[in-house]
Length: 412
Image (cartoon, rainbow, N blue to C red; front, side, top):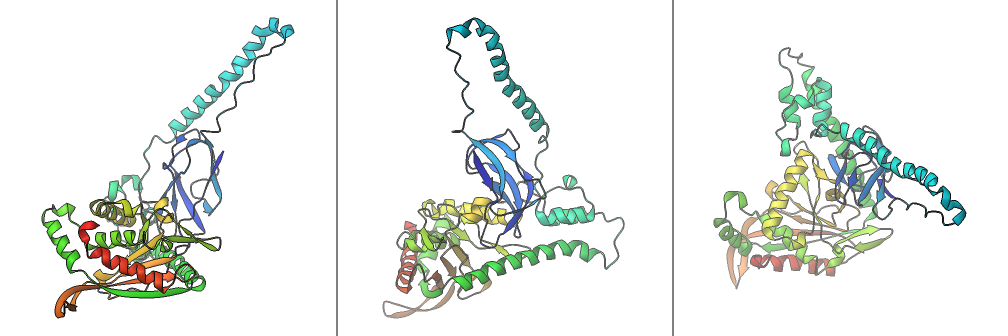
């Protein structure tokens, strides 16, 4: 038997609220299947199961607040098959009564299918209706306004119902007094933002308290990278064009192969280096706050595939439809504030990771090339790293690798 527990979806999470089970008792699950939807302080997350088998028991009910690590379900794994029937009696004295003994055995063997058939009939009768895709904030607002979510048309990814959809569906025949409308629409959003900011504050306070940070930065000439990008995009459709972020993230992923200790998590008093590169990308949410879900196996993705997965990740993060592994798996985080005009980023490491990479804006500045001062698109790249795991020499080597890789964009 395997225990399915409430996973840790970040250092700031202590509990989650079960929104709905996506599987029921008697259902078979495969590794990677979505088994439940859980609401955290940041978003509604689809929780994956990491074993294959049949669900024996569900220990939590929708609406329950479940602490991290609490058993939520029991799964009978494939290896734990039902015990084989007892061997038939071998004593000669009993043989004459064989038919009489065989009948009870046949009845006993026939019972489980009968029971499972009833259970499967009950289970199949319950989840006939498709799961409603709706963000937590939209669900709370619909409850406050007395709106049936099933009657609302969702405009988010895969038809997900957003906060704006619920607001548009609000009845307008009897306008509320001026004081009544703002609390009805703003309160759920304000409450969610307050909880998210508290969660982020808790994680960042822990990071600064426990992690001895050191910081490095370097200036990178992006002339070759941007020239290659312009030529590459000229041959692509608008929908398939690449953004500079794809090149930056891929360069970080490959640089980690040269300085692998930065691709680690701090666990049980020591750094555990990950064999896989799962880069967490900081994404600002429309209602405020941020999340940093993972791009899995970033080093193995082509730049084209990376761009597609990055766009999908941003879209789902803002619609509140991330998977649990995308929040629990990052091995390092990349944040890019260049589009906001920020020159450089000296970020706070997100536990249990041991490093964070920041990119600032790209701006034309004077740069010396072969003894001549020319205008070049320059960008500041920074590294925040854990001194328990690496030092300035290794951190400097990492940033130098990122720079070198960006000078050969075609090789990414």
